Each structure stands twice: as structure tokens, then as C-alpha cells.
Length: 397
Image 1 (spheres, helix red, strand yellow):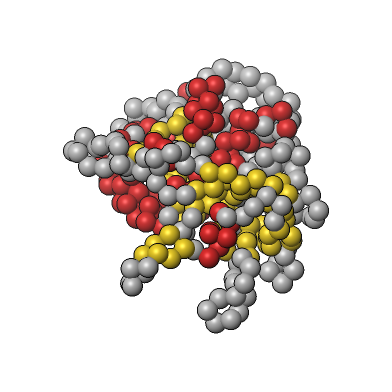
Image 2 (cartoon, rainbow, N blue to C red; image 1 turned 90 degrees about the horizontal axis):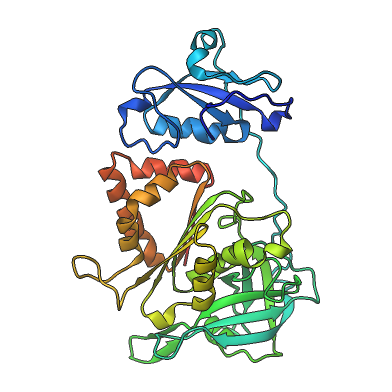
């Protein structure tokens, strides 16, 4: 969205591509408005808003203290003049509200159910943690060419481990975020990949207990079959907007959906003629040690190759320190880069994603709330606003 600076004539566009002139007052009262067009010191500010962004922009203007006094449809066959010359004519136009038309997306869901799972075959299973790192994390790829399974970036599939539980019943489905794009790691749409950490803990008796499904997957051999269900999930889907800002907050295997995002954005451009990412992607990735930077080589290569479009920020808790000497976690990076993050968040095409262990959500939310308060904002209201606009996405487990 931009303010009117230069006169220009347009042909009559379809209604979905129409634009509207918002006359807004009151924004000038907030010094830290983070709008990316000039704000008048007094009187009205005039903003051109695309039809598809009207609902989001109205909410954002209200959130920042502004008041919309007029909405004028812009004619597609007349030149747009400077708003400073048009203020007298706008008073005769009655305010109008238009509900944006939502694009419907073909989202595959539950193609295979637990009662009739798909039998995939393991074709790859390798370690992602470098020597000296913490724990076991594997990248596992399944051949799905023998069925109808398809999926989108940000979705999950279910795995049914063999055997029965302590009650003698078949094991229930475990969900895992998909770590590959819709094209799969083989780039032919015939595979799906997961990023799986071996669950390991001590019980009350001091015995080591391994997760049923994670140990099953981490020990899979090439050629073995796996019961797969799904796909499921709409919460973490990547927007179609090629110029969107994508902020990704991840810990550990929470990198899985973001690997899919980044591969689609940067490594599969030749496979996506209808999706050529030109926006800005920022991954803030929390891990305990350098050796635990999953997919490190690829991430660093993308950051180097696309410096204007991809930024990689690491929070290595056992190696890096905060200014006060504490451990460095994702929330500390959020606080460190709060000015940039809040500037991005207030743009209507910015999406924020969070994925990882449940424990990451409270401290990150608390940090956002504290940083918002410093800037005179109410984080809970802003977060709810983003959620309504489908720009706030959380998947923790």
C-alpha cells in the first residue's frame, strides 16, 4: 500500500482489484506509528488501500489510534490526483464498508484415515545432529508414490507405530510436522519427509524410557513400511502472497515446517512458476549447541545467497549469553530485535509463525507483551487482531 504521490491513469480493473481512498485522522498523535507512508502533522492523512486489504487496514488504523472519516472508491478510468488537492471533494462521499472476498484454497485433508492408512516406504533416514551435539534427531523420507497422498507446506501427517499399548490396544496416531515441500525431497511429488527427535526421559524409578513412535521412526531401516495418515492442519499454511514477510520462531524439531517454507521460497524456484518469493523471511532458531543447528549448511547457504530476502538468527542457549549473562533463548532474540519485529508485525502482509515445544510459547508471549508495552501497544489486542487476520500461527507440542 502506498500514499498517492504521482498522478496515474488506470484501466477499469475487476472489483477484486479496486482501490479505495481512506481519509484518516488521529494517527499523528502517535509518534511511533510505524506506518510506511507520510503522516500529516495535522488534519487528514490519505491512504490508498487495495480492496483485498481493506478489513486488515481498518483494524490496524483503529488499533493505532486513528479514525477513518471517509472511504472513497477510486475510479479505474480517472487520474488520481494528489490528496492535498482533493480534500474538498471527499466530503460529499458517504463512508462505505466492503467485506474483502476470501480466496479459497485447495487444502488436502485426511486423505488417509487411521482406519485405512497409507503404507509408505522408508527410503532415507539420517542423523541431523553433528558429533558433540545433544540428543538424536533424524531426517526421515518416505516414498508415497503408490497412493494419493498429497500435502501443503505447514501441514502434518500421522504415523501409527506397530504393536499395542499397555492396554492391549493398537497404538494411536502420532502427528509430525512435514519437513518437505509439496514436491518432496526428490522434487517429483512422490515423497514426504519428517524431522524427528528421539524422545528419551527418566521415569520415577530412574529408568530410561524412550518414546514409542519416535524410537520406532528413528530406528526405521530403508525399505521398511510405515502406516501414514493425513494430511492434517490449516494453522501453519504458508500464504500465497509472494511479497509477504514471514517471521519464523522455532526451537529444535520445530524447524520442520520452516524447512518446507524456505525450500519452497528459495530452493525450488524452478518448480514453482506460480510462486516466486520476493518478500522477506526471518528465522529465529533456538538450539542448545552449535552441533544442534538442524539443516545448518542449507540454512547458511540460503542466507548467504539471498541476503535481502532471508535472515537467519540463532539462539544457542548453552553457548551464547544475553547482555546480563543469562542463557540465550528465542525470547531473548525477540527482545533484542524488538524494534525491527514490531515494525514488521504492523505491516498487513506480515505473518508470524511459532513451532516447537510447548514451553517456548509462554516466555515468547511474555516478551512480546513487555516489548509492546514499551511502545505503547497492547500485545493481547494486537495478537488477537493478527489472529483474526490469519497472520498469527502457533503450533506447539
